[in-house]
Length: 239
Image 1: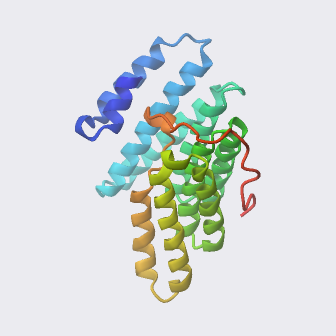
Image 2: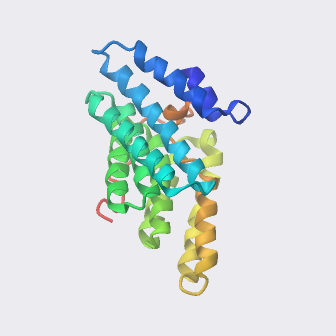
């Protein structure tokens, strides 16, 4: 639902109950046999629950409310993943990236990395290196938070290479990824001597780099400036 996307994404219209209402309506209008349509609506409902979790956490709401939103986000996203047909490559990448974000926020690193790797694999399978790069950045930030800075840098470098294939159309992403790489390098030097600054820097990094796929927010990824090709295996497949 484009209207749901507007209520979820645009700051001037930000209204999660309205976004949820439009996504729920979209779900109800899908025929039972329309697995792709139902899955995409469920994935969007999961993204609303995830946003509610983040807002509740940041507002310091009671733990049971925060965890309730988190569990709902997992449930809806899992339902979406189960419904998606195997040829819905872009939607599969979106769902896995979303589950990676959710499990990363829950502190379940192994589950997060498993879903992130699947999102990257599907992105590269489709030739969507922009989406793959976005997930690789998510992995880099998540691994940085876990203190695994060498692995984090490898994923950030892989994201940079993928963004660079889009030329000027991804110039902003290239610049931000270079900043992320520089931050990780600084953290590698200061770890153990400036832990408080290290934690603040990574929290700031999460604000700099949006974690959702363009397809999950209604935005289009930029056109490529070079022919589509696979970027090869992602680094650290078993970090």
